[in-house]
Length: 318
Image (cartoon, rainbow, N blue to C red; front, top):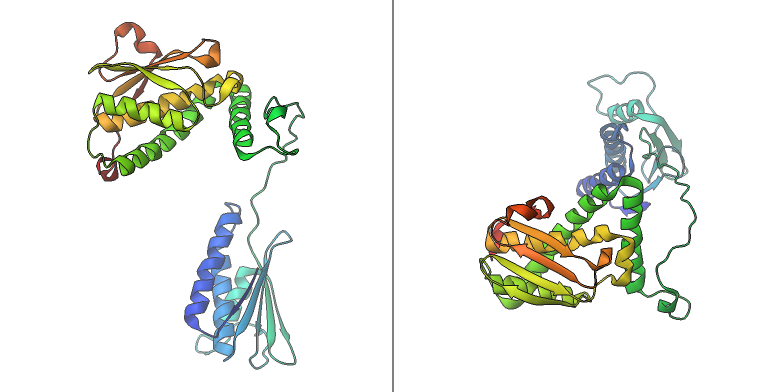
């Protein structure tokens, strides 16, 4: 990365924050990012104070440690030798940078100077993953267009294969927990979009909640319909899963429906909701049947429902 900036303290401060953020994103937890930031700050400050002209900065991280290089057009100088007296007006910043860097070098040029420092940070290690080569069932060959897969079949395959992989390697419980978390977040956004479009505020009626469920599922390719609605429960049927028959590869994806419905229902009615996935295309049923209990469900099905509590923010009721 390269930067060109004027001999200005405000520009130097902005660049220091940018470099710090970059190091935070890519350094390992044990790296001395604070020390690296301070070293860079002293070097860039020295260049700004030393030169009345613009300075050039580059950061190269092609080796184990990043190398920052600063070019200025000021008078030539050298690294101070030995300790710099406290009362000395110059040289202390370079000494601080030298102590905090793995290497520090100054090269006088015909016009100006080049200062290079090897910062004492390392990248986070990345584990090698020798993934088994296997023939994926998705995307379907018939979905290719001119030899390439469009976005929708590609993303559907990505989600299904990811869920199946987690299920296989970590178990159904882990897969369902991850999918439930994603579903809760996505469901919240769906609810906010619905409220923004309809202007509905506050709690929703059971009929409004049921209509929201059907609408959001239809928008993504499902075929949900209302079986019944009353003060105790909402019963929905579904003739087509948004994931198609691919959902049978990863039945844990049904937890997406549960968490989306449960989260929306709990926030919209300000009560605890229980979702019962009574029938599922994913496990071989002809259709899905989902019961959203707005009251305490019967005790005989309590062990198989998913419960969701209201967790509302000010924005949820606006």
